[in-house]
Image (cartoon, rainbow, N blue to C red; front, side, top):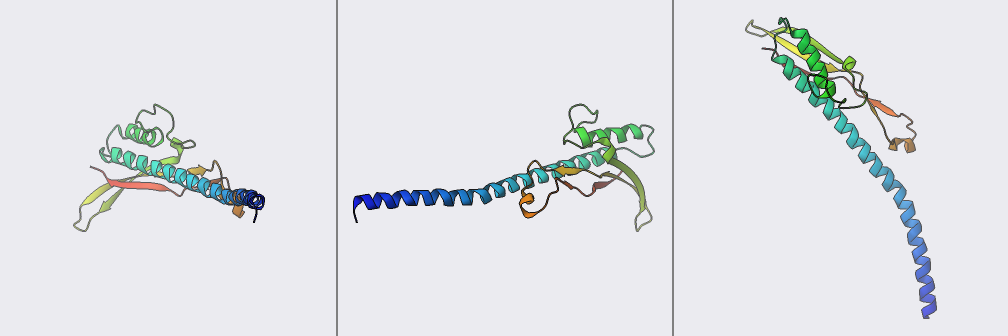
Length: 157
């Protein structure tokens, strides 16, 4: 085998490697985008869950018969959406509004006959919007995923 034949084979191999790389790069980019979008969805879900817990914790410190309870409910709604009780600052997540937040109180009787008050904060109707939907390559043309109701319940004092 001559030196000229070896260099021709090497050039042909480099072209084959470039084509193989191009063929493998497409699924790898789709996979990376899918992982990134899944991470964003988990981040948004965890943000809503944490703020709902913070809001119910705030309301659990106040009695439902308190005169200022409606003020505390408004503070809890602001806490869920803005992360602060006074609604200052931007929304924590785009599309999250105070209209999606609901507060409910209920009474429960224990086995010993004692009554305890419970407060529940629920976020309904929040939707995760894709920046890049990697599932479009599998026939899914949805641009968003609606989250189910996210709620937390605690005992009031």
